[in-house]
Length: 128
Image 1 (cartoon, rainbow, N blue to C red):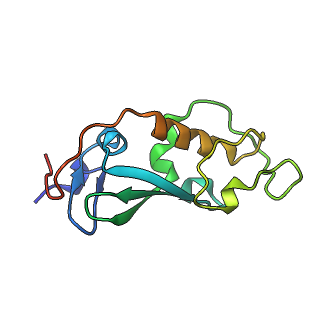
Image 2 (cartoon, rainbow, N blue to C red; image 1 turned 90 degrees about the horizontal axis):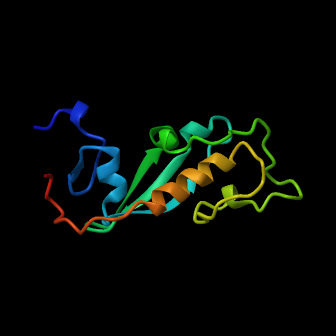
């Protein structure tokens, strides 16, 4: 049995294991499909991924990807204000936000995840 310390994420449905964050975001079988915001604590928001091999959705806390962003984090939230495109209110919109809002850095993390080159497909129970 694999030690939980050596695992970044494990698929609850098929048991596939990604040992590192890089393995996870570069896997063509793990496709980002959404983001569920947590306005009280942005790091508790959830990035949603489709595990294509088995069809399940995998949720990963935003805090686990924080290191992918090294730009400014704004202090004020502009949700539902005139300039806000309201991307955070729709979990399926993954576009970057141009508003200087505290939520904007999460959109940049999504951009970084989507830019990562993808590796070939794996078999559902291939854990190497």
